[in-house]
Image (cartoon, rainbow, N blue to C red; front, side, top):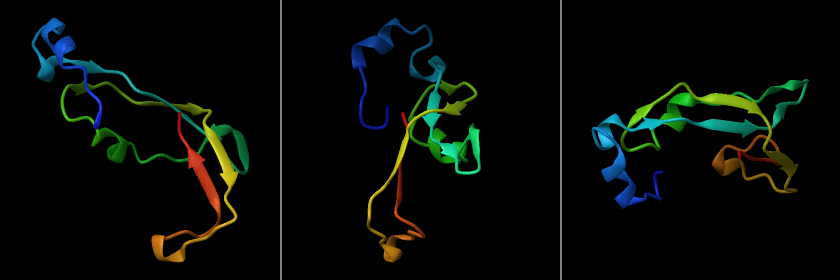
Length: 87
């Protein structure tokens, strides 16, 4: 939503942008020591990308992808070479 929007759709939403309900479900890789529990997600940071609407509770489930990049960039705060993709 931060970079993509469908302007014409908003006309069909009763109450406009401010009343639009936003439902988010994130697929996040599992924690290393708990295969059935997703990695921690800062939901406040996720919520910041939605410029308008009323955000419903964000659902976080096990999914997504994690892999080793072979690179560590300490200047960017890396502590390991793990990359995480959230779906």
